[in-house]
Figure (cartoon, rainbow, N blue to C red):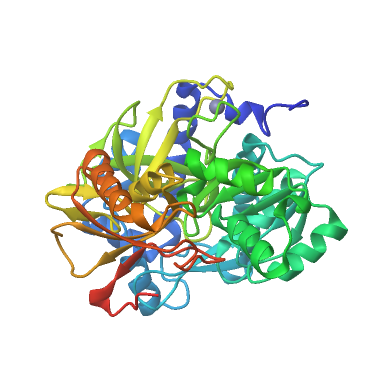
Length: 449
Ligand SMILES: [Zn+2]
């Protein structure tokens, strides 16, 4: 890759000391702003007995109360439309997104023009790091609806200078036809989308996905892009090089982490927009963000005018790969997402993330296709993992029992959890153009597709 290495060299290579100095300054300013503009935060801080003026550094954040999606949603019910943690007047708001949760009502997140610029900057840093460049023609296949992955991530790629085509999900026929016309160099989507497209082209159109001419894939929204076996499948079926390029949260910053050319986990790119703390999910105790630790990410906005967040619990549990400067010259920490704390399954006293099962099933190719479901019959602790797994195309009927045995042994060895594997034919489980659902909670009356 020729040309410049960073989107914003000063920000991306800033020393830890300088970063901390800026974060401390920005945090004090954000808290003063929240106290001034938000009845919600004035109330919350008073209840916790905290004087925001006493918060002088990132370390003092631990004295402030957490916030959660449910609390903020309840706040918006009480004070519609955006809740009293909304700090900017509606005349200054330029975009509103929604993010769904376990209950029906959406949490709304808003941005002023300055917020939108900063969010686009974080996205552009991330996509640049993963290898997107201004001469790329990018087919953008996220959901152009209230979710931020559509419009907001589109605008990040546009800010970087790429030529972005708003394809959206549900338009596979158009994708194939337009590829012949517009000659895309890259796709920006979930990692399962191009595999879905390749399968559809093969079975319904009798065509080979290599003819799309895609050279790069920028992926997010699902764990697949970080899994070597999925990466290989993307190379084999489409001839593109996959990059783990899009991690973020709608209500925080839509896109603020991506890998670099060292390909050793996701770099944090939310500098100047958000401060990250790690906590133990069970106790809420702060875990120092350092090489090798695991914890739930907690977000505090800085330089945010509309809907700022203070100690917002994401539920995402991560492993810190390194907090030392990277071989690429960037100084931000690198991490790997282990899963959502509320997706975590307890199997005989061992916690299992669906993401880890996904990794294992992908690694067991060609015995499997990588596609599977976890059937969860009851809430709480499970006696074993109940897995439905597609066996590979070349697995003979006579070998099915032995393959199931091997997969069960692999679960015991790598996940430390007993499993009951039921094999099903290849391409018999649904894959989605959106997010493929892996966990089926039958006790919630979720149908087994
Ligand atoms: Zn790096």
